Image (cartoon, rainbow, N blue to C red; front, side):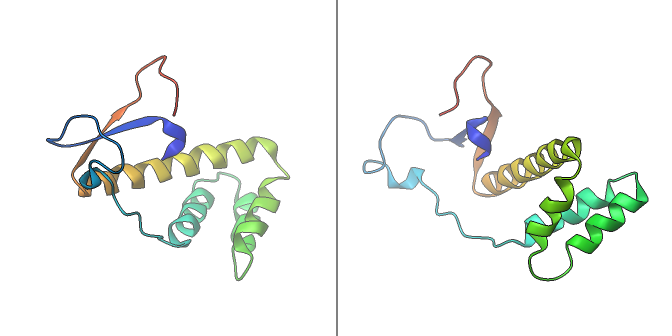
Length: 117
């Protein structure tokens, strides 16, 4: 979950305990495939202000190998690579927070100065 930037606590549950002592504290995480990642690329392309750049990225995501081609096109503009990573990371965190909330967890921002674990 986003490089430990968030802390998660089950609503209404507290206390310590390891994996073996509190199995109710652990969630199974299903593999969701690549659909959401593809939608992130589409949304990123829609956010581009340069129509030619958006067109090149749109062409890149057609068919097999879309993720690799998308990243290849992005790599030609280093500033855009960072924009993509920030955009994608935030969308992934949003999906993670929504999933955790659906499972009954409350997500709080990491405390300043606390190291990621």
